[in-house]
Length: 373
Image (cartoon, rainbow, N blue to C red; front, side, top):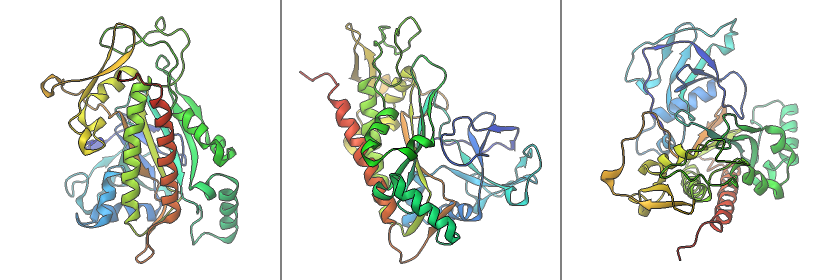
């Protein structure tokens, strides 16, 4: 994940543009590196518990998978940092209040890293996890409504629901959006279709510029969203490994996660994706992959190829460049740790569903790759 440093002053904020799911009201700093999100006490408590967990506590392993937590923003004008985590101590941070009147219950924001910071064309998928969508202390009418919602969507049977997503075509500055109503309308059998929509493979002609994936309008006659197969295959390979690792981590934590999500982000810009592919952090998914640094080039036939490159040939990364793709666990407003409860089987079911869906898409893309022979 990115590792933004907390500025001494949080200046003006703006609404988050790249929000495909969740509740409204999330804002970002002007440079885009940090998010300010309205938070209920339970979500604040959960982030604080993870921040305070010892290195040998299973809960500490979730730090790798959640947005970096920088503290709790009091809109009266200071950042209250939990246990000194995030900004290096007890330093107070000045804040410009959000415009307009603020209800007392909305005066706290959690300050998190922005998970899409550094992506040029972030393709984003929010997937709601779990078979149970209601909190145990919710009123009966809401529990009944959430039970019906799980039954009528893919949540009850698969543990996942596609909340919303956006994808890019390489030559377009604007994403193609798919809202929550699509995910609510499909059945289990249509989930692979939804995953294919989020991980499209480009059917546009490959660019022919040497040593670059940069295109212009003249290069692509019929633009379509998606990455070239060889890059998309690496995205899916990476995400499958990350999903399996996160599932293992969650299986060892006694918690109940209601209405939480995973957020998948990958780079939709071909040139930036090819640069990210060359960095170890973007491709290290297994031990044998960690030293397999590669670069993307275009051969004389206009095909995209991967070639191994020596360490000394890797140029210094651009500042704030995001990885090729990322996986994060988000939204903890209804998450609680419960000693003796065991793992959340509904969430684990959803994680396995996502592993299977990504693997199926990866295997289909593999058939499009050039053979070694």
